[in-house]
Length: 77
Image 1 (cartoon, helix red, strand yellow):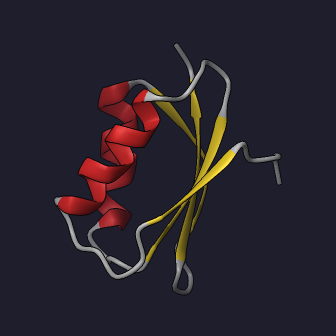
Image 2 (tube, one colour):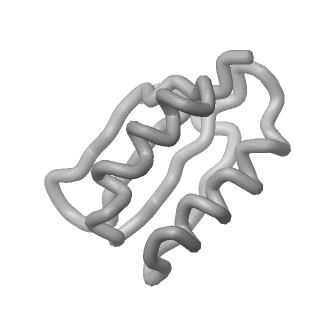
Image 3 (cartoon, rainbow, N blue to C red):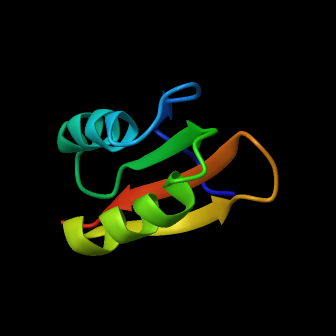
């Protein structure tokens, strides 16, 4: 697993609040920084990959076999 620069814990929160918090934190990231997201919201299984696609972040790993779900994202540009 790649080394993360930061972790965002949104356990207990539900979309759209989850995505709003993630987006706010990702705006602060520098290019090539890696961030771990921890969530227990089943909607993130669909929302985070779509968010990454549209916002130009790279989804490095996605572990959704058990809660908390873990997503590793990298800021591309």
